[in-house]
Length: 209
Image 1 (tube, one colour):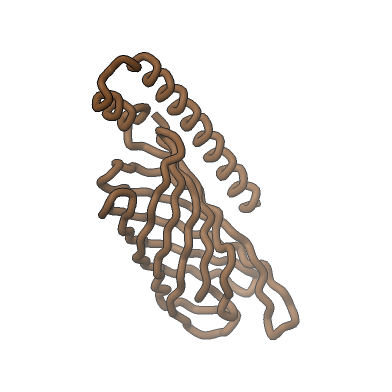
Image 2: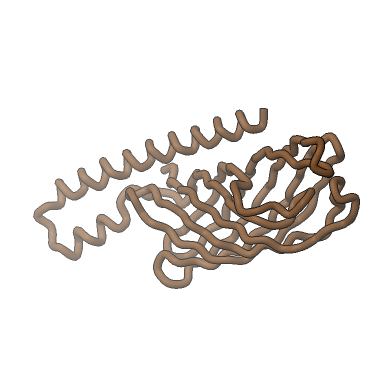
């Protein structure tokens, strides 16, 4: 069920991004047509601000990572499908929240496989440094549910990212961060574990107005 919800939310975010991008593109084309006789400097200034009325955005990202969850240490792979919303001031910074889902299987003593329902609530703060490059800090509340037991823990992260503008209102996002996984009980290993991992995010964001 969580997979279905995640896919639906992801598709809704994609649809909103396409609408926002198409609207922004049309607006930019119209603005260019009506100001064709204007000076070059004025045209460039108009184009740079076309389409964005408020800093609110929606988006979605695929999160890839490795490291400590429950059970044996997981290799590099998909960890979450995460719709997100937030506020992004171009050239300054952003705040966003997201709720990701992803299920996977973990074996116990190489015999029985258990399905684990993974979810995480993320709060991310980013500050632009040079152009499209930004530093980011993350807090995550992670939950993993299985027949062996339910567990939750906190993660803190720090990293950097960059954006690529593809329309006046839509941009692609690529991020890399280092995550500190705080102490939690592992029902598969039957002991407390902690550690660290890498997280790679690839996604998009689109201004809604």
